[in-house]
Amino acid sequence: MSRIYLDHASTSPLRESARAAMAEVADAGSHGLLGDPGRIHAEGMAARATLEDARDRVAHWLGVRARQVVFTSGATESIAAVSWVAVSGGGHVVSSAVEHSAVRTWAQRCAYTEVGVDPTGTVDVEELSDAVRDDTAIVHLQWANHEVATMQPVAEAVAALDAMPGLLHVDAAQAGPAAPQVARSGADVVTLSGHKLGGPTGIGVTVVRRNLRLAPLMVGGDQERARRAGVENIAAAVGLAAVADELASTGAGELDRLAGLSSQVIDWAARTDGVSLLGHPDERAPHLVCLALDGIEPQPVLLGLDQRGVAVHSGSSCSSEAFEPSPVLLAMGVDAQRSLRISAGWSSTEADVDRALSALDEVLSELRALGRGTR
Image 1: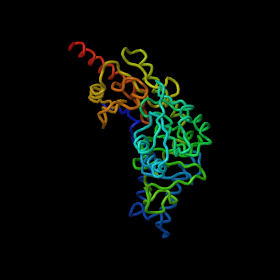
Image 2: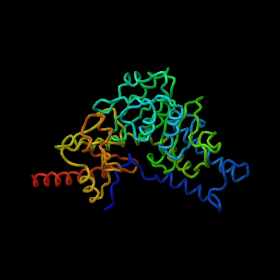
Image 3: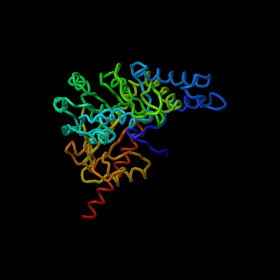
Image 4: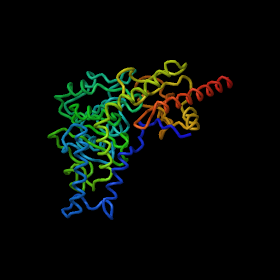
């Protein structure tokens, strides 16, 4: 029986549209991708045309101008680039307490104000605005949380911080097919990840507000209109453009379908003893559900599910690279050690979720029985 992958919030399998587009470009000549797009010979100009066509298609999907789209190696680099604006100038930084580590690590290098959240993981916009000082260089606010799915009031923040001297950066890595809403939110900078959309790894996007000039993090060349040095990853850009084309026509339906899959998980949790929903009950990203597990450590749950062919993740980073409680769950004031994250994506089906929940029932039953037997 095939395995079930429900960890799309970490990374999503490559869509067939992206795979086919990248293969077509790689085969477009006896030497594959021909030419440096910065050169004026025929091979270079062909590469430039391919790159700019990809940029146009991504921009069209996002609803912005092509000149606003900067290709990077991924969301982590995009975040580092905009964060460097604050770090290099020594300015003050404001962020919510539930930002991704890619944001927090940079913010903590500066004079830094962290704004707390309520038990649902939601930031109060008034508190965020009150934290801004005359020397605030940047405010970070994610679109949706990577662990508990809570969507932040970005539109309110854009309005409240309109007169702020610094930048408003929105991390949209978990926006998925809703990315066009974020790109058009009015934020100064929006950062996106290709692989979380079902595009290739090695490609990300920074969407820069019109007439805003940012100093580059990557220096050494004038690529990306002098905003990011280094020869562009044309194949990855083409793959991402294929995903953008697909989502331009199917994105709304995909969001509805993902919400339906998450509802299956939420309904199961509501009727299962010792399991409850974490995050905001309504204002949430449609693809992700985080569950609190009463009295059960996540590691044996993850292992038990993996043995049954189901891949999910724990909301706590102690089952990941760092053996520490989840900063997100700590900030929310909930149990930071015992949670499970189930995230669907473009390849997920109702049958996948049904099988995963059936396996989860088995694992939890076995672990609770084992716990009773050891008392």
